[in-house]
Image (cartoon, rainbow, N blue to C red; front, side, top):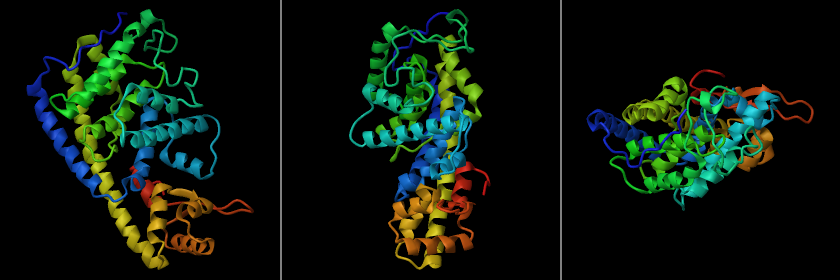
Length: 367
């Protein structure tokens, strides 16, 4: 199996007659999605379940088996064990990397040192922690069935001696302006995956970089556009299109696939953001009617940021006096807004869920 020889960036000889109609459509759908984002007063809070969903789905592509509600249940105190616990820790790390990246990009651009830091966070104390977290590889690696030799590999990325120069060219390309930013995002993601610069975690880091790059190029007002739902649903084609870049230099096929992913996911994400925004406004009115309290927005924001919780966690998030909070929770349970997952027992507080938000995040009725 021969090593992949990375193409020089920007790419030459792309089939623009094929790609430009998709570029136009992808930009239009993404602009509509971003218009929704700009209308949300506190997107980091209101869309936190979608951030958790992205962490779950991006990790699922790599083999984890855990759901959004299981992650949030564990966070609230319904402790998972064994393999589930390992998977949940990976989700926590992925989410932490996303949050850390958002803060970083407020003041600094994407740099290789920043990518290494994201990798260190991602692999902290989980599977892959022995794969030099935060460091680019110094050894040859390859992709194939478990235990296969390099001769049996389906893909062999560039020699580690070439990696430093290739990564610097990749960083320089991100700093440049290609013909279109969405087309450029497709190239940035694929080239990172093909360089395969880490021993583990390349796919997840590559997917984290998609919204970050779009935010850096000011295509998005918030680094909150997630593609993993589409990539998980089309996993075989996702890998096949990347592989065909290395085997056939088929960049056009990859870019067309990526742009279609953006078109489909921007519509779906937009619909989900719209649902969340409507739920927020509806709940603001309902909760105020139920509680008649000055704390309505504090309570609502807490439910959106942590939709499965213990009363002690809600108290910490809202700063609402204990007696008032106990009364509010009782009324919200009575009205069916909150569901009890575990009743209070002895010193153990009850664990409750804001089911309507979780149903939107999961895309199906689970409560």
